[in-house]
Image (spheres, one colour):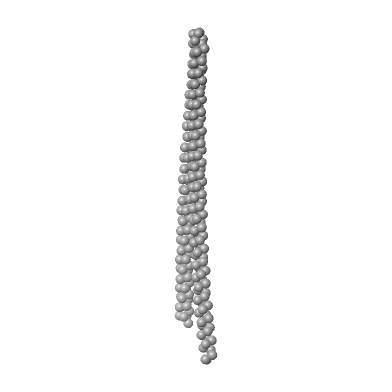
Length: 214
């Protein structure tokens, strides 16, 4: 009896220690599974945020490119206007110099001077008409470019709104699916509890019946 008591105490200690170790390992496994689920959800949220940021960055880059192209077009138009003005001033200077030379050389004959003046006036009117036509064409092209840029801006804004709406809808769908899964799990637990209670009741009734028969 003296020898059996310490052996029994050792067996009891070993069993209690094994139970404690099993409980600790189970808790560690449960914590690791929970952490893995949390990590998966956080990773999915990070991926969604990164995709949204990439779309926003692409839209901002396209807007910057459009603005730069518009500025380049405006610069080109202004340069063409300056070149046209300079050419017109040179033509006017040339015409005035030609008129002075003609007046000095053709002062003896009135008819020849009048004819040269009429020819110069007609050429000047033609040059002015050509310059006005070119100005009208440039203005029309600039207005068309501005209209196209505004339309592209409106299309970009609508696409961005559609992307944001799609992202919000996907988030709502994910939340609804999660709630449905939770509801189904709770219903299954309730059904399991009810079946267990029914089995226990049946077993107790059978035991009572057996005792009464005995």
